[in-house]
Image (tube, rainbow, N blue to C red; front, side):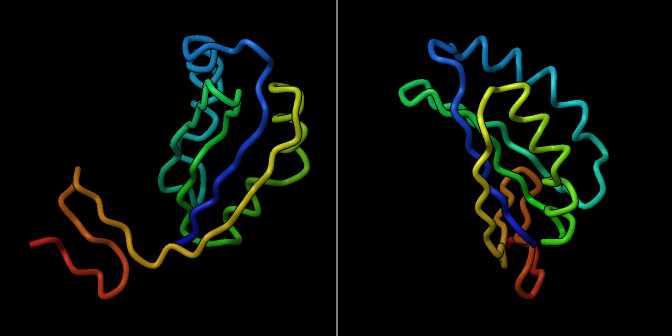
Length: 109
């Protein structure tokens, strides 16, 4: 699995309510997306930073999403180029489903 952390600057003065409304408007495009397991929208009001934390099945799936069209969409929507960091994600603890995923794929006890 691959975790991708995306960050970009938001327009000065963006509030949590503003960010939430913008993020809700883009959320449907990620439902059912091939290779995407989860997406968390991120907002830091102190720095005016927005972004997302994505969990993908593979790096290829992540790179297929973060193509030139997607980068143009982010720049158009938020007015800034996105920065992307990729991380190998060998193990995930999911307390909602009470599972540990990855490694030996053992369920939590």
